[in-house]
Image (cartoon, rainbow, N blue to C red; front, side, top):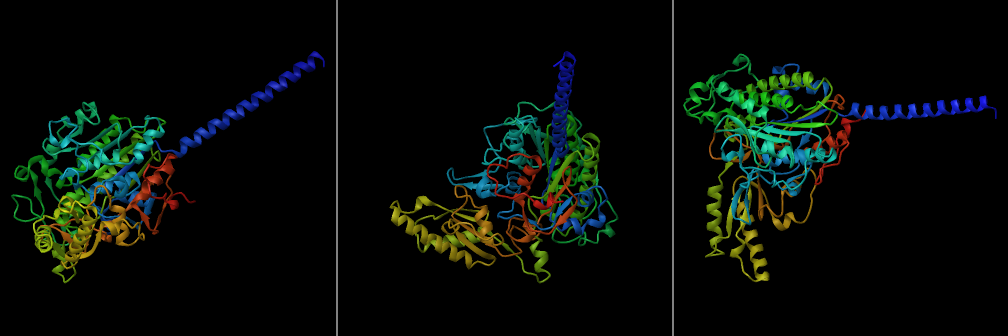
Length: 563
């Protein structure tokens, strides 16, 4: 081969090689770009405490275009989403949303529960090994240690080698601590003594500068010097009952639970800063704090996905006191809609339109005020635990004369005093079976009790998805739960008076909650297919292309990704 031909061959080979390299580089860039394009810069998980699904439609005409309606219009709505276990409380709800599993596995069986080993009541996040940061308060002695599985936020941290930022916040400590997981960059909650946001030494030794600066503004004080008036003329609140009813708890210092609420006059008699969570100002304050976190932590500002969890607690405080038919509840959601609009507008500006993903759900629903139902000849009632416990102990004395068989009744569970049974294994087993049967029979004779299940019945395994037995099995943790579980009739609650209401049952008014997805990677649409609350976490895992939480029992929501 001549020198010229050799040179041409080398040049041609060089050009061919370079083209292959350029093509390969382009492919790598393309794959990288595709990966970045399909990943949100920031995931925002919003939990609205005590949000019934029907509120989205009952109050829809009062909402603006860019809060709840923006999520429903431009995102994906699940119309038949439910909690698939009992008890439906705040602590278990937040844990289940972010772990993708139920109390049987994540271990958060209530907000508080009776601890069998220590024979003491414990809170789901209280932890005396840690102290408050930001203000000297016992409200900071907390950690996520009692949650025994990982969360979606934990898994994001693991996947990115702890490069992702995770921040959780709420008015309630459990609403911040459980969603943020075991190793976040921060979890913050409202301190009712100071009106400031605090954290725990579990997370850090001092507050970040942005939190200090936020607290120095003393916004809680500013809000509580204002009046709570309706956002619209009160005559237009036709989706609710009358403003003046006998079914609502009154603020101290006020004769009626009616608008307006002048907190500059009421705050002192109602605990100063402690009253703020029971007003829509709690949502205002948390929204401002969330925007402070986005800015202060620079969330969504690099190529690594960050996660912000926000739990709006004030609707729960207001709902407990007033009931779901109150004007105060409707006005709270009208104002919360404005909070969401403000938050989304801020995210558009700071993170970028269609650069973040939001999901919104609730930790449980709520029962109607039973007295308001019975006054209209509808089935409902009140279960008085103290009366039932006294009657049950008297009944057991006939069979176990000098022994205190019942140790505690709490969260619709009966804890037996195992030390009072025979030391002989065979005799002990027989006595325990007899006691369980006697208690079950007595409870079934009490007005308002629908079902009773012993531990041996629960141990037999899973039950069908829709039945109460299955819900009790999925909410029952064998190490932490009681020996006997009972479920009340629909409409019945464990409560002390005819004002206000609560939640916790297996019925649809407590289990049926909204699940809304919106933003990056989410198609528009809706579905009426049944989905569990435990499906949120694995859905996010698919969206983020990361591992499911380690105790996950839910399934990804397929409709969300279908073309």
